[in-house]
Amino acid sequence: MTFGRVNPQFRLEGQQIDGLGNVYYNLMEPALIEAALKRGEGTLGNGGAFLVTTGKFTGRSPLDKHVVKTDSVADTIWWENNAEMSPEGFDALYLDMIAHMQGKDYFVQDLVGGADPRHAINVRMVTELAWHGLFIRTMLRRPDREDLDDFTADFTVINCPSFQADPKKHGCRSETVIAMNFDRKLILIGGTEYAGENKKSVFTLLNYLLPEKNIMPMHCSANHATGNPVDTAVFFGLSGTGKTTLSADPQRTLIGDDEHGWSDHGTFNFEGGCYAKTINLSEEAEPEIYATTTKFGTVIENMVYDEETRELDFEDDSLTANMRCAYPLHYISNASKKAVGGHPKNIIMLTCDAFGVLPPIARLTPAQAMYHFLSGFTSKVAGTERGVTEPEPTFSTCFGAPFMPRRPEVYGNLLREKIAQHGATCWLVNTGWTGGAYGTGSRMPIKATRALLTAALEGDLADVTYRKDANFGFDVPVSVQGVADILLDPRRTWDNPESYDRQAAKLVAMFSDNFGQYMDHIDDDVKAAAIGKAS
Image 1 (cartoon, rainbow, N blue to C red):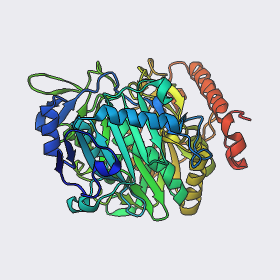
Image 2: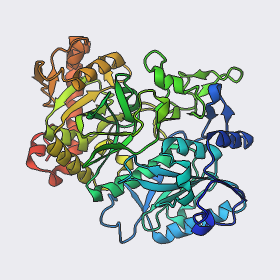
Image 3: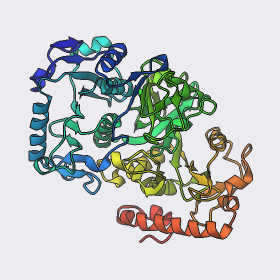
Image 4: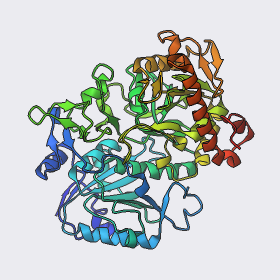
């Protein structure tokens, strides 16, 4: 049977997906929570939040993501970073998944990716789990109810955690699979309950489609000065670097926390919600995000809680360090209703340096900005991917390699063109360690990071004195009001300066070795900005 509101001309049967049990179309939050509770998918938390665990998969599984290699995408996909799947393998996977779905109940959400209607895509999410429907309804943009009556999708995503792929038959790596077929406009997800795969699939779609329209897709958060959307800032960074935390500034208006596009008209959010890490989340430091954890419909993933009181434990990472909450944008009081802004005035590249070498903030030239964008140096923070249990230094190009279907230079050149056209001041901000590497030093104080960012965004760093960093060549402010001078010179924060020098030399060599792969694809000014002796 069919329940809910849907375009009668665009039911699943019209997509040749039939033989299912009950199909629930576009249920709203109360009904989705009710269904999830009845099905035993999770627990009702304080304030009506939904508490759930995702089993053995508590983070992304990037090695299990595949793109179907067809003629239309063969020359444009970055195959070194995206595992291929044959059309025949995908067809077999699809038929087997549809067979597996027979007679079972499914939940359908018809949603939109992209706040700018000129560049948005319509996405149909078909989920085995009711709470996955709640999650993706929270994370993507929700059409007005009346718009559902004639909604048709550009792409369809089917997520079936109970289905296990067959690597030999389907041409994938394991029983877990995320398979994208651009020709069939279809994404299949199986063998994982981790809800983040749903939204990351949509982002990967947009990251592929938008460059063809001269739009820069960005794995970043964004905000703008209150009452002045022209004064927009974007924050690039992988999970755990502070994108969500730092963009949720009560003195500015939040555009979004994870993925945006930069078009000829300005910046626009892809999403309708936020997906924040909750490990060590503090009511004092992040009051608005903290408050969402007890609001109706917020999805709480993989957090330990008291069975009686349902109080959440923000420090217990026994399930995963990648504990999360997903909440709609309007739960943040200063969030933009339109989720659009102007051309970025400031571009912040967030890095979580587990070596404890990089300064808390540095100013970049346009060439240095492209260099650091292509390098994407950070640390994978515990839990964000399977198998990561402590910070691991890594280079994730464009600060989002797992979600980039095209070669990095495509995005790097787009960013460079946008900066040249519209002008932007670029900053590298280290939210990682100081006073020593991970295990010895301490995490960069969030108050200091916020003070430095505020100074940068308000233009207070335009006239301060800078020093040129001897190892990395960028400009570092010598003194900033409200921040201890010693913090701005990482070498002084180490007990043993010689140890710092050795660690810095090690990181310089890593930058150099990593960037060698781009040297044949970039202009001379970016080559000149390269750290070390890449060739």
